[in-house]
Length: 167
Image (cartoon, rainbow, N blue to C red; front, side, top):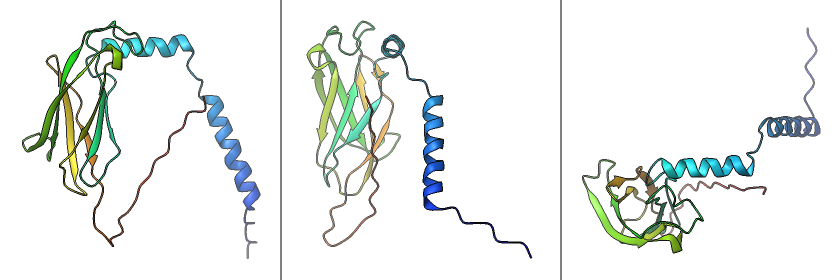
């Protein structure tokens, strides 16, 4: 008969986890300000929608869509440069955009740092949608979003994410 292996204490598990996290944090070196600026300038040169797309603030019938356009390479974030641009947006029930349910247009310029925020309404509760933007002949990556449920007395699963920057 072999003796049972000891069960680690809560304290030793927490200390081990902390040491592992500290080691991982030290292994990841932060970018210098010059390196970060070079990455932003590089992204601005790679296309109209190089900074991607995002969605948020869903209700049962609305969702907020976001992107940033770069009308020319000099229009980097915070530069105050670049011409005004009309941006078209579309929301579809399918990824191929064969069933577009909402579309519209908006303008952005250097005064808004070429960002686009659109509140899309008239959507169905608890439904997944795909969205994209178009400007100056280019199309953004396709994003996916979902409206929130609207069923009194019904509890749905809730997933949350939290992101923070220590700087």
